[in-house]
Image (tube, rainbow, N blue to C red):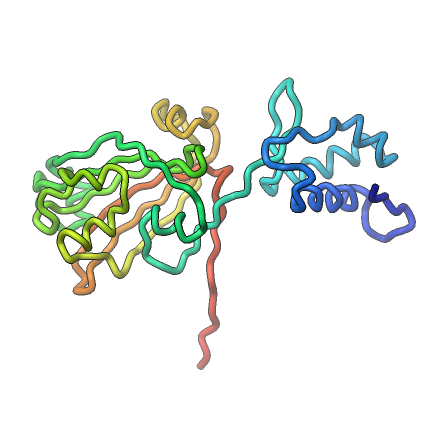
Length: 248
């Protein structure tokens, strides 16, 4: 058993944090496993309950652990990295990470666009758009609620394609219409879940944080081809951004 070194300059809570993190990383504590109680950890490593609380709190804040009231503390599933570099559909993005995706179609059909959608896609209010609302599950867990709007003038009958209910939107657009987004502009906001439908579909607690993403995708000639909104579970996602320096 790894020991806490009291003669080390590293704080005791951080040493315990590091021990527990290594056990999570190497699979000793697998996702869904309950870790020992605060009292058990306190006795095992001969540290105070305050020290244990600090270590567990840090692991929970970083997304490695989560608490269930009245039951204990459990190992969280790894967060899904969202790589802000390429224009990909959800299925393409998850498949590239080796994850199993399940799609539940909630509302797929042709609708007149409202002012917000019209402004984003440079359409007239009331012009028909294909609305595709789907719940995404990864490895069995709901992680994203997404709604895409695609002008019917660019992809007529898109919502009627059987493949659109469960497959890749971008692959279907390219295969059936020869159109594929090559550039996208996204905005990210952290919001609190209060809408009962979002809470139920994403299987989160009321008041839980989620990541609200808005995307406008464009064709190679600059024509906007998709306006999409996504609600991503805050406990299952992390953002990864590649930065470069401008050399003058």
